[in-house]
Length: 253
Length: 223
Image 1 (cartoon, each protein chain N blue to C red):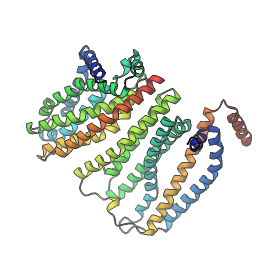
Image 2 (cartoon, each protein chain N blue to C red):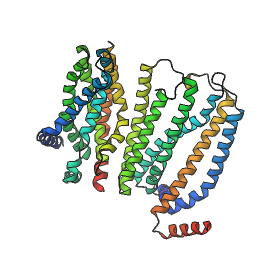
Image 3 (cartoon, rainbow over the protein chains, first blue to last red):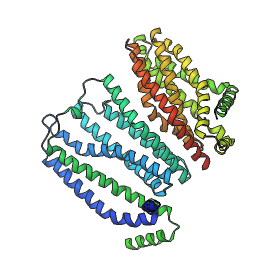
Image 4 (cartoon, each protein chain N blue to C red):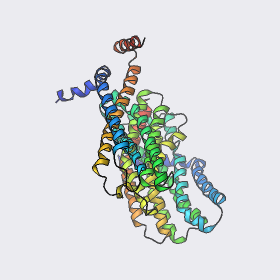
């Protein structure tokens, strides 16, 4: 029974994480570059134009993966929060605080591309559509976590407080999402919705799928890079981190 | 156990009664914010009546948030919080008593003041029961969620603005349901659906929020 948990504690060791993530990093980076490159080229150049929206629909190849990531990163924050609070795993705290800014950026990208797509489609940069509005609230939730993490001086307390906030937020997100959708149906009746469009043909959604997977790989790369830097900072007094930094400096010079 | 709950709630109530000025501040704030809007958008009754559900709810929400800023600060500074934690009683129960006492004095006062301000904004008398009911069900949720933020920022010197940043996004469902209920009542539609949703949110908040508040306080005290 106790044996089955050793991998978890092993994963919690900063040194072990630093070594194993170094090995994963190059593979993930290649996968991200390849998938995003193929997906972008396929989506922008080869996928057929939409019969209604023409070429302007192609922005979904950035918008949808970014929106996917923005939502799943928040769930990841809460999962990392639970792991950090229950198993007192330091790496989960690092993951939570390093993933939050990435999630906020993805949220921002989704909002920006949504606005750019909205201008030719809806005729306005911003429409109080249910999806856009809940995305905006999600951005504010990310800001709250980042601000709380920076306001609390003590590193461990900051991590725990962020974990609690992320868990409270994740309980609230479905409620917020449904209430916003409900509000939207009460106020606006006829807006163009992606969901009401006839289902996308395969040539259109296949590059989208490639890009979504590519974006997830990209997120993993950026998260691992940020976590590795943070682990080095936190472990700067230990022997292995010092030799690691010395080796890095030597490689540069 | 319930004895401690009652004792603590009474103790908090007594403390609140001894500082009536602090209790009055959110109410005055509520009234002033409402008074600002006719000055800003013009005194036409039609317009004011149309936007009054949103106005009343946004103002009430901000007033509750303002009243929660220092909710746990006094207990944090004089060491009462530490005593709560080491007392052996379940901390979620104790914080629930504290928030309940706070709501009885600030939230309930807002609920009682709201019909007056609603009348001034031109709400018909028939919509007032829905206003009172929706606030009665919604303000406990606002207090409990806000207390989570107050607990998380308890050790910080200037937590006020941060509290707003943390908590306002979480207030969105209550705002939508509360002002939706009032809007439905204004249009002569039944508001029961909205009110039942608000009641279920209140039940959810009473059950879950005390645990988050307790976790936040433990972190703040442990620092």
